[in-house]
Length: 385
Image (cartoon, rainbow, N blue to C red; front, side, top):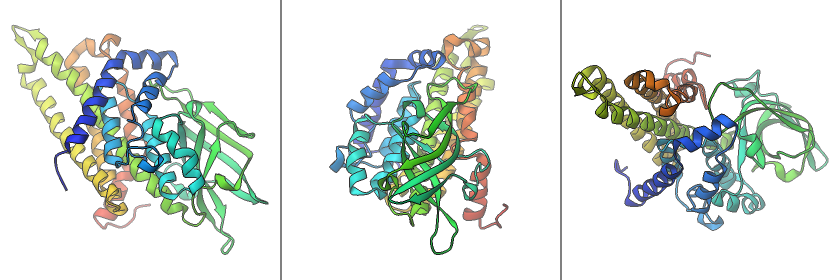
């Protein structure tokens, strides 16, 4: 494994960062506060091939791995233009379809993932299930050659921008009668499918929704891959989700740290820049160290995933997501402190980030569940739940 990135990935980072900075954080916050979406940026990024870097070349993508897509996500966040749907649409949904979809599903969806033309949401969380996917109650039953889907989902990102939702449901095992997970592509316009916005205190251009499935009739080919392999398919999508989540947080941490360092260099009190005081310099230095460690673990997770080591990638991806989420919170909090009162002034674009980075302790997997995973699988301790 290399600890430095290739020239190609460095060039990709530079190009994506330039595009993100051309739009800028003011563009993002204006849209977020007004209820708008980053459609223009998304579409341009898609036309330039940045959203499709991990889609197989046979379907018009870049043919690279999750590490390159994560780099794209990080650079947009570091430029102050985070797009949460990047964590979902090209990472989870496109990856699952590319690995497990039928030939028809690949032909239908992957070329449009490659160009960013299509957006797809991902729905797993339920009101009464939380992190316990074994309690998912959204179920699908066969009706002739079709499927009938019923259930609810909550806190699903970007449904109002999506053409379809990749839904985690459950079907009945004919041999045992037990429920088993299955993945379905559900068009957002399907009869019986309703989505309602959840009012959030987050300043974000990506909205959250509750989903309701009331006898939604789906054709047989709405089922992704094999009905019997859905658990493996699900985890194949969750590892990229954690890697992308780590990159998302790392990018936001970089954005906040850069603002804090710039202000600490320029702002003078009592005849010297405030950055010369260890009370501010040391916390920023500590954040820099923790940020680089989180980025390195994210790089490791991506390399393991791209090599086909799903279990190793799972461990590293959980650790990376945890580390990046924690340092993002520290970075934004310290950036606000460095700016003093200006840290909460809209002009400086930091106050609105407090909630955004705090959400990383909750989603896409809570810090407690990450610690449970590490305790059980990495340390071999007894399962606590």
